[in-house]
Image 1 (tube, rainbow, N blue to C red):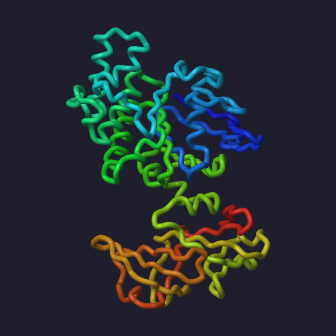
Image 2: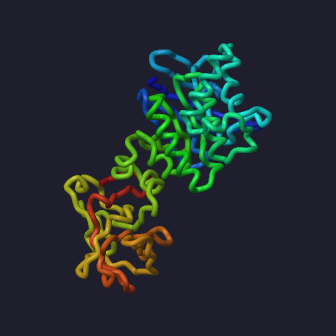
Image 3: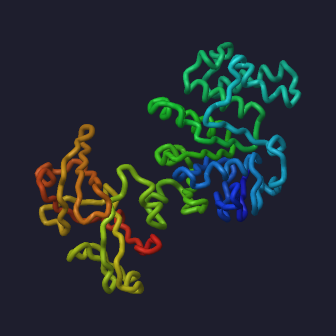
Length: 359
């Protein structure tokens, strides 16, 4: 089921008449059968967008289409959606079987058919042996699977997941997100996954929609967005460790950090000379005895067998940043001054005023 959002807007007004644009003219298309991550910081409008798609919130402006059908005015129960909340919302007095079957009772599905569907969904999400337990007897990950099975049992056209992993510990989050991806692929259902966790979104999404202040910042395949950020916000939000930022100067098509020319293109000659921000991904450094850029090394972190991270500072706009190196000669970075060359495909130039990417 393809989902189309056309100029979708939601404005909240408080008791004093002050307006907040939680979602601002969102205009995106979500391909049928794909898992899309709505990603962004708290307050960016991602959950508000999800609730408008589900019908729990009415948009102030804009339209919502499921395929060719305009569902903007349609009640939630008539949209054919399955919704999984952050807190699972399971009925504590019911067994797993009864919780999964509950939506089918409202649809007047015959009991024998409902029992069979509940069993199938439980098997799909990997809790087939837990049907007679109650929620209090389940782990957090198992409860989440019950909630997903309950959302899927009525064969929805669209599955909506609102921060579904935030209540789980790190290991369970990893396991459960892998299960969500498996279930989505097996069912082929169009799925929208809301999260503020970039690792979650990038690991399981076919595409991500990165939002901030109710606006779409960039949409695309996770790796493409990481490799080609459209603006400074996208570059800063995606990436662990985060991107390192330097104060730079653009002069006649060349970008300088201090006196060092680190970047030059014909396209930049069209830009006016001015201060810029230089962003370099942690993996965007080549260590060399003859490196053009000198960085002060604060300390070294060794993670795993062959991955070292140099924490460094100097001329960066953040307090510290990290350089990831693999299989490098330790003598090159085990010193106070580290010499590096920057990889062009991991180095980005941004406008100081509006954050747009220049190169």
